[in-house]
Image (cartoon, rainbow, N blue to C red; front, side):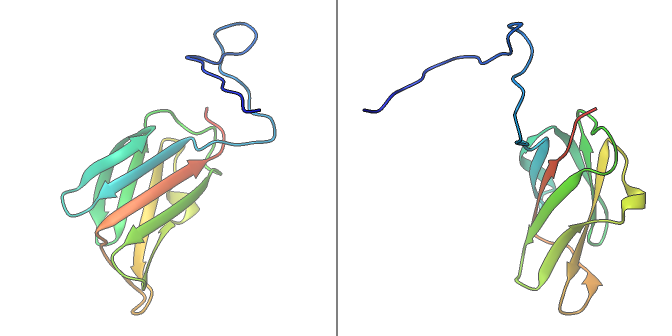
Length: 124
């Protein structure tokens, strides 16, 4: 027998706090940016994205992370020889994530058509 659960809101016992995930972690921020028009196609907890030079980008967060040790997953679309990565940890703040896109064939910084980012960790 199948069951259906239809709800509008799930809250903690006090009725207002968010539900605590047990042994799970949800994305705290994500974005998909069209780098040709430099517009955000979709996002959660990302207020702006900026072009900092060839292959260098910054994502600014609406709500800060608790520290700079958050995890990130990045990706770019242009060619199979391109890779996006979170830039050196010394450049990050709790409110920004710096991204670096490289052509892995030539080992040179390179712009991509589209850049995606997912952040996990704790919010401040």
